[in-house]
Image (tube, rainbow, N blue to C red; front, top):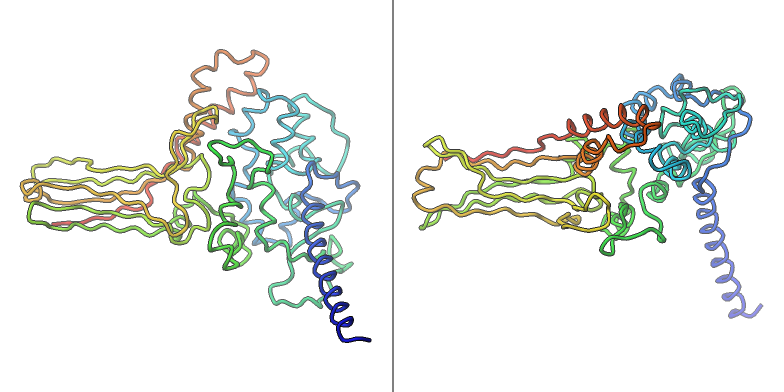
Length: 394
């Protein structure tokens, strides 16, 4: 065969192999997360997370404390009668993905019937659970073993689900994309998607360095998915500094918060806000806030208008500064730089606004809506926490 023809044929084979591999990966993602998910059909194993936990004890124990396990909580439930059956089904795609749990929830709202199955009432309260990610049409899927042994036999008739089907996509950011990224057709506010965490990551150095979502949010494959609501997780993603610089005319106070380890904007969504403030305390007993700033994406309650966007890209810093006169500096006793995180700031505003107008709700929905709304508001109001407090003493 002519050498040129052989090279051309080799190139064609390589290209075809790449194309088939790429399409296979895309096919798995599309098949695994196309909404609405297909019914599991008749199952021989109990899909309840507690049943999975009988063997996967560590994963089950971690999952129970996560926001994933509370995706069907009062903040979600109170809204369903107001957005109707169709809107509720769309929301449940991510909050309660399996059609069986979705149907149980719709039944509780009076919007459908539930046939006798292994999915018992109460299953829907688990939110995003084991079956949501790992179970499709009776087959169990998961990542390859950590030892990297891809030759291991994954089918075993001696365990409840006869083994599992390994997929490398379980350790790729794309696996999280469907529920943490607005589709391309979604509405935008000032050119930005409401959910753009995957896009923010994709445009960052973290993606270019092959640092996946799972590396930070599921380290060592822990089923914790910690984020903005977890102080220790947030502390690992930022650095803070405080400096007081004496000058001939007084002093300059400088503080900084830098996004050093968050693989997307900090904070990512429009819901959380991060408050920075510098407090000065004087020998006279006076305590005064001398500088402040809010980090976040502030939108109106209707999610139609951007008020401001001060989120930090990876590697970006926010600075606060203040100048004191020579007389003020002579009386200065202490300076504090305080960082406070409010993970549910938008929800607090939105829940409170709806609670204020609760008398306008339809009478036939109040029995469901009001208790859940009241509890959701209480949870949102209690979510705020102090992240960092740096102190300088004269």
